[in-house]
Length: 328
Image 1 (cartoon, helix red, strand yellow):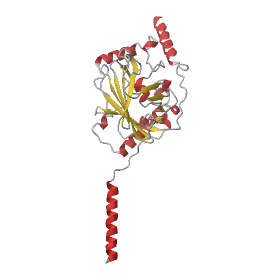
Image 2 (image 1 turned 90 degrees about the horizontal axis):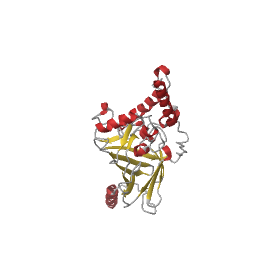
Image 3 (image 1 turned 45 degrees about the vertical axis):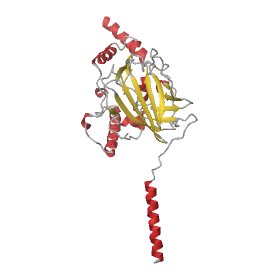
């Protein structure tokens, strides 16, 4: 009897201990802190995984709730499609003179992965970028019609000036590495494309005078727990600016506002979102979201944009030659 009683007591104590452990909150990973109190997100981060997810939600997926396996299957199919379209099939099947060899593109080498969503655009709920205003469409069309009349009409990135905040942060075909540095009181984002560097003050520093306008706006950051919030205003007017993806031309007005959120998801993951509001261009705000993964093996090389920029003189020279031919 004594042995049975002791055994029952042991069983009860074991059960109670197990219940107490189960009820304790799960330990979540917490980033280390720098001397100024910022969560430490320094290092090289890569957003190339997002290349395997379309920017906008395909119309055939509207209203569907895809499983993780289905999203992964679509990412793999997208990768196969990119490679298939890049294969040379003769001049008669070519859409133009072509561009870079496929081996320069990250999607040619990287293993396709899903970002956990069917599109990069997460707001509005339809996963599509809102329509541009009629006046904005007219100005963009005018810019394209007069594209090679002058270097000033060409897209700002082609001129090695700026790809804008969207061009810097949104995933693209190559050079997706972002170096993050955190000197005291600042976060610095250095992109390989055009070697753009964004220096973001952290804290209560007020924005610049509204009369001071900049290509990439005037950013100010603050931390909300483990989320870095970056608010940018004071953009200058640019009639021909890179849009949210390669081949998409857009514009930005002085009223544009951008809010970015970088959330620490773990030691090797950052969750990034960007909300753009420019009611002089789009009919409503929209938000894109995708992850960055730590990539310590990634090396940023010299971009040398101006030194190797044959696009501007060749495009302008070709247009002048066409004008001379038409004048004959």
